[in-house]
Length: 146
Image 1 (cartoon, rainbow, N blue to C red):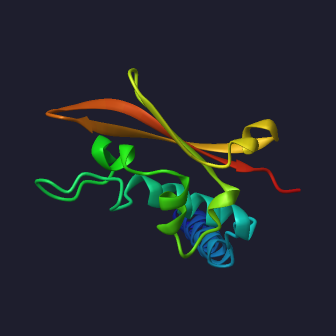
Image 2 (image 1 turned 180 degrees about the vertical axis):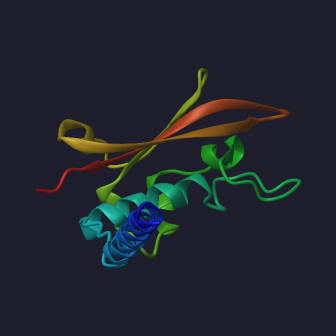
């Protein structure tokens, strides 16, 4: 009889310790928090580069709007002045946008950025040339700050 009580007592103690361990783990996870620190300017550059991949004045609109499918006619009709007019939210002189395919390339912005240490956000894009769509890349160069 005393063996039965001792075995049950051990089981009860093990159960209580397990429950307390689970509760302590839950309390610990409840107090866990994640903070991401970044510079405001980095967020602005990332937003700008994402916008460029889907900017309506660069992407094809037929048969519908497609993010990342750039239209060569629209690219060929842009120059630095008309490119900078499209942005009310960004100072275009801070950026250099280079769009390249195997056969063609376009450059918008301040090319002196290439002489500085800079960050590059690179996005794969597709470029619609007449009836075909070919792969390309879009690189957004921004000067490092600090």
